[in-house]
Length: 120
Image (tube, rainbow, N blue to C red; front, side, top):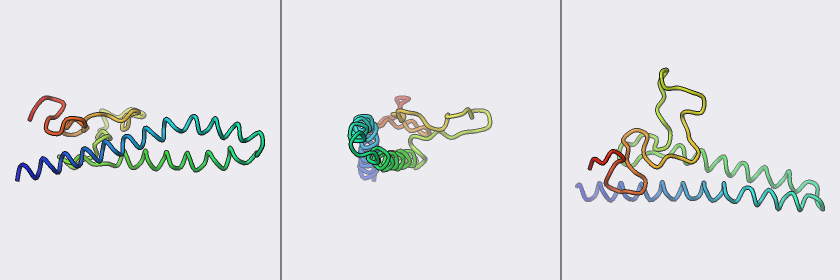
């Protein structure tokens, strides 16, 4: 049972890493794509407008998907912090870049069996 649980956690972490890599890839590709669209805009004026909107939408969907990802161990949101009236500040529920550990149980994104506090 424990081996199956560990395999489930490792697979969940692999999926979280994949989603995070997709998000970062889109983020890194956004600036060169916008530069290319602006160059093309000299010849075709609507290209920058029509090109940036789908890129922005794709980045927004990837960001939302990433932030709605759940921890494979505790099943809470992995990247989004739980907020209370005492801990709330503007922009405190998400972070860029996304956290490397679960905001609830501390499971590290790159270590399958340990959490950030060092507990097994």
